[in-house]
Structure formats: C-alpha cells, structure tokens
Length: 323
Ligand code: PMP
Image 1 (cartoon, rainbow, N blue to C red):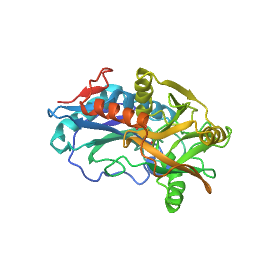
Image 2: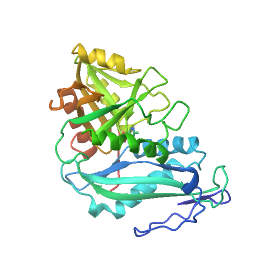
Image 3: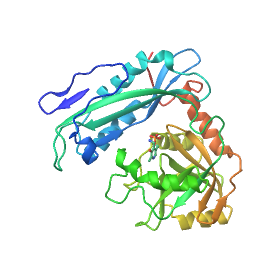
Image 4: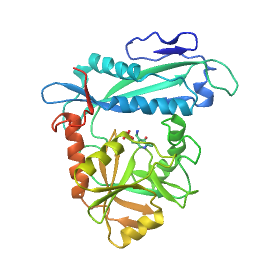
C-alpha cells in the first residue's frame, strides 16, 4: 500500500515475493525513516488460522510512525493486509509445536530528496516467512550479557518506537556478547541509575519471592511488548502479584544474592517466553546457566502458547481468525 499527501493510502496489492525498486535518494536510505512490526499466524489442530493481537501491533506501528514523523496507517489497513497475506499463504503455515507463519509488516519513506525533513511519500509492506522455535527446538535457558558500555536507546530518543535504527545500535553489543558466549544482551539506562530496560528483542521479567512477577516499567526507551502486556494479564489472573516498576541493576543483584529471585525470563513474539539461566555482569555470574526453566516461566509459556495455537480457550479475544 502506498501513501502520498494527495491520495492518502492507495494502490493496495499483493505481489509475488521479489526485489522492490527505489530511488537511490529515497529518504529511507539516508535518514532512517523505517519502522516495522512482528507478529505470528498460528494454524491450530482443526486447520483454523488465527493472528495473535494484530490490532495491538497496528497501534504500536501508529505510535512508531508518530515518533518518526511518518504517515499514519489506519488499524484496519494494517490488519486487512496481514489477514489477506496470511490467507494467500495459508498452505505454508507449519503446524509443528511452536511453529507459525511470522509476519513482518514495515513502512519506509520513499520520497527522493536530500535534506533533513520528513518524507512526503511512504510504502507499507508485509512479508511472511514460516517460523520454527526461535532458539531452536527445546526451551533451553539462555545466557545474558549485562551491557554497561553501550545503550540501545536513550532518554528522549526512539527506544519506545520499533524503528530500524534501534536495532542497528544493538548490533555491536550483540556481537560482542556472542564472543563472550552469551545469547543476548540486557540493556541498562545509564542516565537512570542503571535501571534494567530490556533485551535487544525481548522484554524481561523476574519472579521475586516465588509469587511476585516484576518487569521494568515503560520508561520511554523500552519497547512496549505485546507479549509483555499479555503476560501481565495472564499472571494477574493466576493470582500472582504483578509489578511494573523501576528495577536497578544494583537492586536486582541484591535480590538475587539474597535468594529472592527464583526465575528470570524474557518474552517477545519470536521466542514467546524464554527462560534466562544466568546473567553475566563482567566477570560475575548471577544465576545458574544450567538451571531448568522454573514453574512460573513454564506455566506462563504454556498458557500463552496455548491461547496462540488454539489449545487453550481465547478468553480475552486475542486471536483474530483468518480462515
Ligand atoms: N523489545 C524489543 C526491543 C523488541 O524488538 C521486541 C520484539 N518486537 C520486544 C521487546 C517484544 O515485543 P513483542 O512482545 O511485541 O514481540
């Protein structure tokens, strides 16, 4: 779907997958006006296909567009584009455990000019790819590097938007963490007492005292995860106390040292819920890299995946049926 000031959103079409052509001066190549989303379509045992909370992704794309001065895309255009693509690709949706069709909606600035101002034209696209389990098969605990040097996003920046630039900034710390044997990075806010923020592509949760689920409050530089918000709802229903609040690295280290943190997990569309075994803060190892997933992590993962795949009743109306 294309956007111009004169025509608004127009020219909706489904095309065979292939390269697209853009002017070398298109604003997306120079000023980073690019935003995206990620969501999944699951096929259940009866062959019914559903999208998980597509309206929430549509709303987040609108917030990202607002921050990057891009065109506002109505929720129904976003959801219809996803539904129609999934319908066309339905035969390619794998049905193994945890498997899905991953959708990548994105919007780019297409106007050709050199100069720093918002583009006047945009294109919104959705591409799709069959997806397996993010970390390959079983739910193994991951190792997380505590990043004290590089920030993913800063106060007043674009951290709460899902834009390509945030991910470009996290590539170097991610590569360095991998060289140290870690799977992912956890980012801090150095201007806010080293408050724990999130991973490069996932939000983070801690189970404290066995019955309290704690996650960093949205600080303006954390991405508001749709999995995160779903988990907050499910955890409260299960009778867990839920806290969205500032957790500094120092507080987390104290809680962990006194044995009060029983589980840590990360969540996001791609990996759903992934247990975190240990955090590596320089030479200090917090946690046990080989500890199996804890009971709260497992329960929440099963419940959420159950709703997504149609095995558990969708009591919140989170699944939009495609066919
Ligand atoms: N934080 C970041 C930086 C992410 O890229 C993602 C993935 N979209 C998340 C958190 C989790 O968001 P969601 O649950 O909507 O996938």
